[in-house]
Amino acid sequence: MITFQDVTKVYPNGVEGLKDINLHIGEGEFVSIIGLSGAGKSTLLRSINRLNDISSGEILIEGDSITVANSKKLRKMRRKIGMIFQGFNLVGTSTVQTNVIVGRLAYYPTFKSILGLFTKPDYELVNDALERVNLLEKLHTRADQLSGGQQQRVAIARALVQQPTIMLADEPVASLDPITTDRIMKDLKRISVDLKLTIVTSLHSVDLAREYSTRIIGLSGGKVVFDGTPAEATDKKLGEIYGEEYLKLSQGEAEE
Ligand SMILES: Nc1ncnc2c1ncn2[C@@H]1O[C@H](COP(=O)(O)OP(=O)(O)OP(=O)(O)O)[C@@H](O)[C@H]1O
Ligand SMILES: [Mg+2]
Image (cartoon, rainbow, N blue to C red; front, side, top):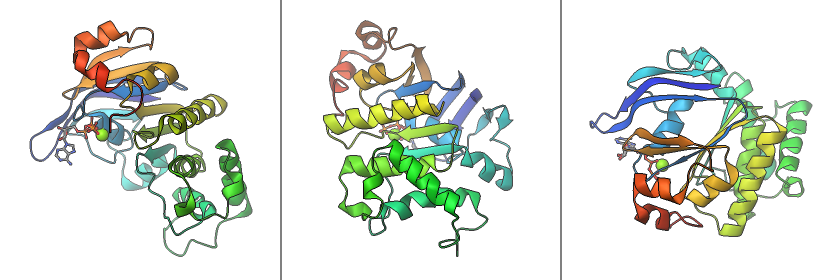
């Protein structure tokens, strides 16, 4: 599904965001990326849909290189890759429905003059996506009137109407309370199973990574320093890699 071949990313200021990454992530895997701040988690996620370019190596999506894709091909490949963020990135003054249907723009030629051109099947996809995150009753509510957890579920729905095969999530629960966090993680898990979605998410909490993922990848200084199952990601093992301090910080909810 996702293959990294000798991927290195050097930022213009010389910082090595990723170093010699070789990974294969298969269909339906739920992968959590853990590591200290600055380890390269966001860089790795953003390189999958080429939100940032890599410096060398290649990234393949379903066998197709996204690294060398031209703009037309890139656009097409990005449709299949949904993404959600810590800050939700919704338009507060717009309704839930409008925020979600924006995900369909990936299928239309230009951003402009599109509103109003959506078809009935588009609106049906919106309803279906909102049902999957239990938020259909908020269809006509303004996004800024929702709680943080509800907003993140709108963002998930917006990604789902792209009908993606891969969902990227950059610290999707870092700004949410523990109970809401659990709900969002459960939603993601259920959706990944129901839709056979491959999920790659960065998380600050090791406990969450262990609870919900099928695989945990640990980064440090842009390198993969751990790659294994939740059962293999013991406190002892992660303590050896990151030091005990890290485990304390990442216990339970996010640190901030
Ligand atoms: N646009 C950029 N320009 C220069 N350096 C960058 C840029 N973005 C990230 N970096 C650097 O690359 C390294 C990896 O950053 P990245 O944002 O991927 O880390 P992260 O693991 O997501 O951290 P956090 O947990 O704080 O979100 C860091 O040293 C960071 O300072
Ligand atoms: Mg980050």
